[in-house]
Length: 290
Image (cartoon, rainbow, N blue to C red; front, side, top):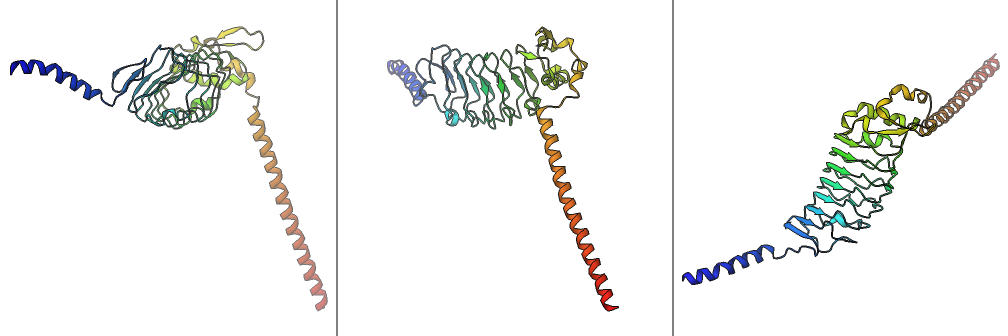
């Protein structure tokens, strides 16, 4: 009996291990330290791996050569909370690619070749807390509504890209923002930068390197200066300048006022004309009675 027990124990352990892992496939060339983590770091991948478990929560794909993500990639992975795509070959993200990632908390797209972050990229990823987009040397444009809906975002990294201008409305849509990195971009100290500078001045506590860690180039000679040596008065000549949007608003307002004035004049003229005709008619009737 004891010999049977000694013989059965290894068999039972093997059977138990087999049953626990039955139905769970780890992609080839990847490691799966637990049933909710897939680690494919530094495996030389040129595309997303096959057979990723549907219940994956942490997907590590950094340090590969992945050039793109299918727009429907995250549809099946509703439990995903951590996605690391750092240091790959991504050049663009299709609008809506990450719109279905309702539980995603951490997203790293840093050190890629992204050129633009279009509107609608992140959809309604309301759970996203940290977003890393730094070290994309060709990233020079962030659309106005790029981060719309990211109401829980606390940390945003846009450092060491090629961004020379940023609309402050992009940042005003992030009510939970606590940390933002913008250093290492080719900022230009012109009137287009004035509003962003004032925002940075008011939110300097959100900059890990402070204003000292950010520089902009002077329009005249291109000399780099630290934002810490600038003040609101440095942009005083910009206060009387209007942007293209301001000019369009002024023109549109002028057109509206002109149209209203024309309509009002038309009704006033019509009223006076009717009044004169009525008065003339009464006069004729009074003369006829006489």
